[in-house]
Amino acid sequence: MFFLSPGLVAVICAFILWIFDRKRRETQARAEARPRVEEDLKDSTDLQQVEEDADDVEEPEENVEHIPFIHTRYSEKEMVKRSQEFYELLNKRRSIRFISNEQVPMEVIDNVIKAAGTAPSGAHTEPWTFVVVKDPAVKHQIREVIEEEEEINYMRRMGHRWVADLRKLRTNWIKDYLDDAPVLILIFKQVHGFTAKGKKKVHYYNEISVSIACGILLAALQNAGLVTVTTTPLNCGPRLRALLGRPAHEKLLMLLPVGYPSKEATVPHFTRKSLDQIMVTV
Ligand SMILES: Cc1cc2nc3c(=O)[nH]c(=O)nc-3n(C[C@H](O)[C@H](O)[C@H](O)COP(=O)(O)O)c2cc1C
Image (tube, rainbow, N blue to C red; front, side, top):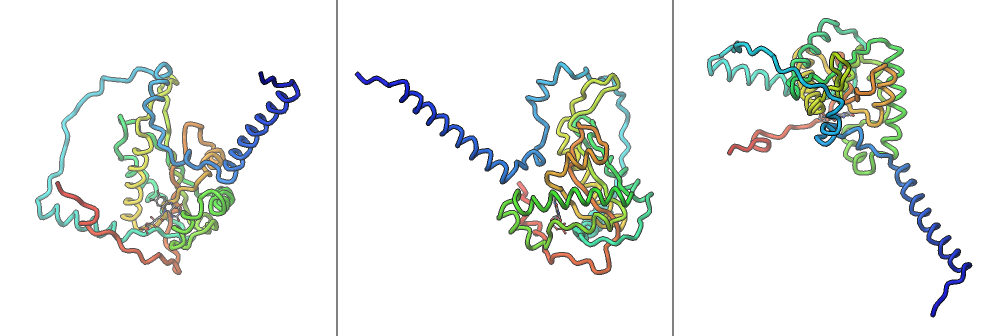
């Protein structure tokens, strides 16, 4: 028979505890070295969450009147011309990271945001908030938050491959355009809404809906003759949300500095994939 003395049992227990503690510390160290960034990228439309929240959610309004649709029909020639011209307009769009401090007409900003607000949305929930920042002091505070986080992103969070992939863009964590651009538009997705009675309203596919609105906004800016660069400041969402006084159910999706290009603006010499590379006809 083999008996363990109390002393030996204590030593074995201490050893097992030490192994567990070392594993825990290793995991924690790895997490701190490369903090999770996926939260910023995740789409929060989650069917399980919708089910779990069901008790909190008010029954929807079903009595919406249906009215005749008014359509403008063009001749085929006109359709070809319009689609060609629209493509040519959008093909001139580039991400511009050198923006002049010249002011832009605010009526144009109103109109491009109205255009973005025409986007389709899951169950017509319109889950977007466009925060327009003009105040130079607030723009500068935004820059400080972003540069602080972006330095950590480049040095630690993004990893070697991501940083290498960005080299061709010649970007880093210094973002002059956040002070220079006369307008910053911060686009928030509302992960849920509220009914008139204060109950939670489910915002289905809120990230896809807001992303479509952002695409329309980019096209509207291009159409108006303004420039921007699509930016997704990683890990800055909560701090910028707090800075701008937005509620907790709004999450930052995108930040667009908007203005005219500065005289010395340059862009990477990119080509775009051809139609046969992006289109498959079945
Ligand atoms: C979802 C998304 C996120 C992006 N994030 C950034 C960013 O954080 N900073 C940046 O300088 N450019 C960003 N870009 C811009 C891309 O680098 C740019 O679109 C790409 O290089 C193609 O160039 P073009 O926009 O001039 O065609 C982003 C673009 C997209 C679509």
